[in-house]
Image (cartoon, rainbow, N blue to C red; front, side, top):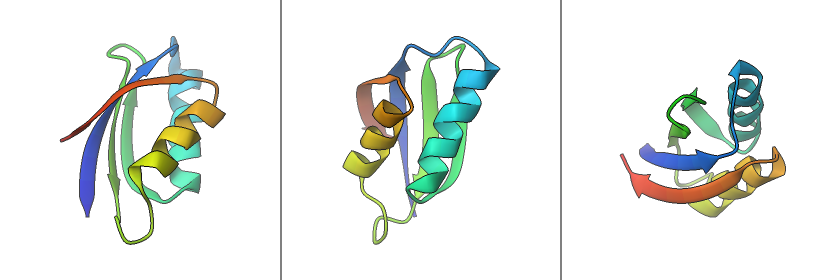
Length: 72
């Protein structure tokens, strides 16, 4: 398993957090902790099934901007 921290712009409430978490889960995130307060998501995934670009696209598809992705 691999874990990354994704800095996300545009989240403002718990509904935003749920939207991002659901989008990440759809592309294979096994665990995610999303925080509108910090504008970030800590995401764990299987690199054999999911890639960082897939995670980024999921966040963008949910309507938010990915600012940065770093290893956790």
